[in-house]
Image (cartoon, rainbow, N blue to C red; front, side, top):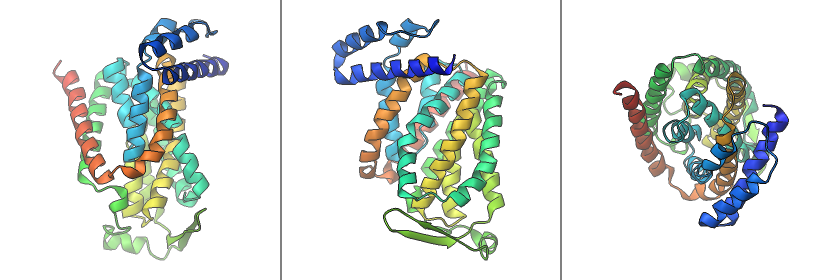
Length: 328
C-alpha cells in the first residue's frame, strides 16, 4: 500500500471516529458507516471488514486513557487485544500494537519535549542499543513460529505483570537507593548532567555509567520488537535506581527513547508484512482521543493502586495466552 493510500485510509478512520463520537449509539454507527461508504477508498481495501471493526475505536480510547493514567506501555493492552479479541496473528497483533502506540504516545512526548525534561545525552546512548535491537526483534517476530511467538508473548506478559506488582511506581523510588557499592563507585566521578526545565526547575545529577544502560536498553528493545512491550519498564526503572535520575526526568527520557525505538519497530513490521489497516485505522484515532483525555485525568489516578492492579490483569492475560496455546 502506498503512502498516499495509507494517508487516505487514516483520514477514513478519523472521519469514522468523528462520526461515532459526535452521534451516540446505533444512530451514530449507522451515520458514520454511511459516510464512510461514500468516500473514495484505496483499491482492494476490505470495506466490509473495516466497518465491522468499528468497536475497536471505543476500546482504543479506553486502553489509551488507562495506559496514560497508569504510566505503562500502551502496547501491553493493544497486542493481546488484537490477538485474543480481534483475532489477528501474533506478528500482525504486535505490529499493529507498536504502530498504534507510536501515535498514542505523540501527545505525551510532545508535552515532555515542550517542558524540556528529556535528558538527551542519556537518551542518545540508550538509543544506540534500543533501535538496532528493536529492529532485530521486529524482524524475528515474522520468522519465529507462531507457537513460539505466542509462548514468548504469554511469558512476557507474565514477567511484566510481575514487574508491575512487585516494583514500586517510578515516582516512589529514591534515585540511587538500590545501586550498591560497586555501581556507586562506577557512577561517581563522571561529571554531572544538568536539565533545565521550561518551568524554571533545574535538575543536576551525576552522569551515569553508560555501558549497563546500553545493555539493558538493548535487551528491552529486542523484547519490545518481539512482543511489543518491555523497553519503557526496563528503561525507567534503571534510570532511577541505577543512574540516579529524578523520576520526572527518567520518565520523560524513557518515553523519548520508546517513541524513537517503537517507530523503528513499527516501520519494520509495516515493511515485513501488510499492515492491518482495517484495524489500525480505528485504533489510531482512538488513542489520539484517549491520549488527550488521559493526560488530563492521569494525575488523579493513584499509580500505587493502578499499577499492581494492571499487573494482575496482565498476568491473567499472559496465562490465558499460554493456556490457549499449550493446552489446546
